[in-house]
Length: 314
Image 1 (cartoon, rainbow, N blue to C red):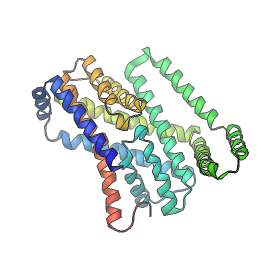
Image 2 (image 1 turned 180 degrees about the vertical axis):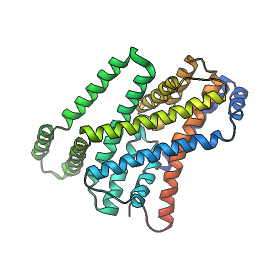
Image 3 (image 1 turned 30 degrees about the vertical axis):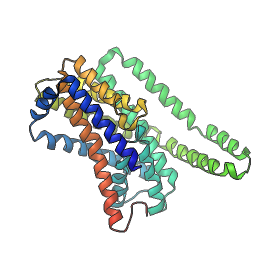
Image 4 (image 1 turned 90 degrees about the vertical axis):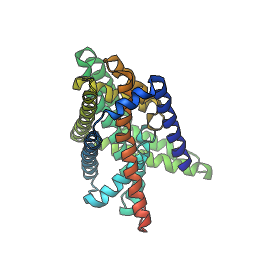
């Protein structure tokens, strides 16, 4: 795992160094140095605020599934999960389900189901903010796409569909070779059944609203950075850049969406009239605050509990 993290870091550094020399290293450094010191305080603070809101969503989902936890132990697990925020599609955060099981006896399916619901509402929130940013021209298409996604998720998690899948698992040969796969698939079905409970109207509305609010907070930070560098953008334009770069990164299935997220953000910013070097500098700042900062916090939480003799998953 450490090797993969190291390779990912090297790839990211090579990417940004390559873009810096392509756009003009001196120009990129000039744009970075033009940012006042308080930008490195305000932007991380806004990102932290966003994660505090998302932690409230995590707590809300646990209560909805009948497994409430006090904020301190729950916060430790949630923060530790941020160490895996760079995993493709943020899928690594599902490991919180294992930690919930080991520390609090909560079925692992609960944590995995919550993670699935978080990704669904993140996507729904991003589509809503993107539709708002682009205006009425693409709103029907995005709403149709979101509606199709919602219907597909509902059908996938329908009790009848789950029963058919369980019956299929029961028909699998009782061979040792199939035992591990069968157990894994049953856990997945249990997580999907939890997901269905979180896709009911009220949990879905709360989760999507919180996700959309966080997207808008990060878009406001992006807008402020561009404004500081003398490239003012409307909040709608910043919202398009922020959500599109996240969606592009997820669709690439690469760790942290390296490459595709940067290309999307820089391309859209330049299309909106931003200077290339400023676009790269702002993208770098945002990626440091939304990827490296949460990852560092998560690793610190893990290290703190390991050094104290009580691991998160103990």
